[in-house]
Amino acid sequence: MARILYTDLAELVTNKGVVRKGGVGVTEADLGIIHDGALLWDTSNGILWIGETRKIPAKTAKGARRVRLKGKILTPAFTDCHTHLVFGGSRHNELALRLEGATYQQIAAAGGGIISSVKATRGATEAELYRTARERLVAARSLGIGVLEMKSGYGLDWPTERKLLRVAAKLKREFRGKMTIQSTFLGAHAFPAEAKSPAQHDAYVDEIVDNMIPKVAIEKLADACDVFFDEGYFDARQTRRILKTATRYGLEIKLHADELANTGGAALAAELGALSADHLLKIDDKGIAAMASRAIVAVLLPVTAFYLGLGYAPVARMRKAGICFALATDFNPGTAPCLHMPFVMSLACLHMGFTMPEAFAAATYGGARALGLHAAHGSLRVGSKPRIAVFNCPSYQALIAQIAHPALCEAVL
Ligand SMILES: [Zn+2]
Image 1 (cartoon, rainbow, N blue to C red):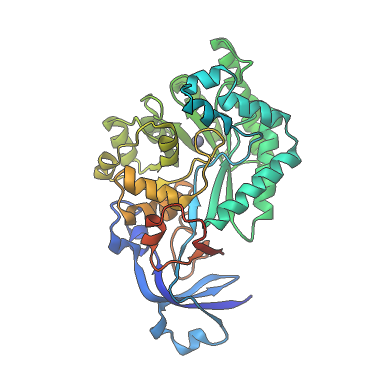
Image 2: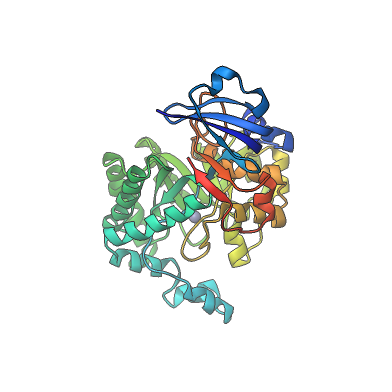
């Protein structure tokens, strides 16, 4: 056990009011910023004291190692609550094809898209998948991410889905002292290429429900279950079946919802009591009202919309309804090859109509709430032990304004 007293911070961003409001209607005052801040950190028990440097009580400082962080900020670490971090192969060539005029559908028809990642992932060994995912995780942490969710979904058969979840479980163990990792089973990411007819699609859903989810639960391979509920993917009947089964097996549930078309994803997330509904580019007022009534977190993923030129989720209407926002990278090889949470906040402010305090709250507290981890993470409170980050800049606003700066994060604890 060691005690460290961080002092002289230009800003200590606590998110005090954000927590009180459940992440809804965030303003600058809700960030609870303490100027010239100080924080006493105990490596076993977390935060013991928070306040202004000049008001540190003598007994608080006693026995603690003092670390002066003049001109820097200390905040809750970023929570990246939606990533597809584990996969084989690379799809950088698809951007070249798109720039030459090919559509995403044409690229997929020519063997690219998710199916090419599935092929590369099935062909990769567990050790290879582990090595590349580990490199990505180290990069994520270097950018200030302390809590990260990773999904399976590039296997679409049980041996490969299991391989992906085992890699996630191994990373979770290895990074226990450095990051908090959650794992999500996304066997329903797409239909495997070998399932062509509607009957074969239903047979794949049977396989998920009767075989994969029970095994995920028995082997304790995931914390949650997700479904790609959208036009051309899983329909309402199939999604309901999968998520109800996951709930029965004790998994949390979430959805890729209303991204490509409005299929009622937001309303289904509310009906089933999901932790979050993610993407929501095409959400309608009915879906917004349903999410607000059940306090479902809206996970918005601006990099994907930016990369594909899809337009953005209707933030103003969701804000008005009182929905809690989370921002995440959606890191994946095809449509969002980016782990830069500060850049995600910049996009949210410049293209989606977020204010800076909203973006910061969504990238920290909102993400933690979307994972059900907000009791511990996403805010700085005495008695809690969140992942915290130190950034070499004078204000949280600089994280957003200095677009994609590569070296602002000094440490994640
Ligand atoms: Zn996704």
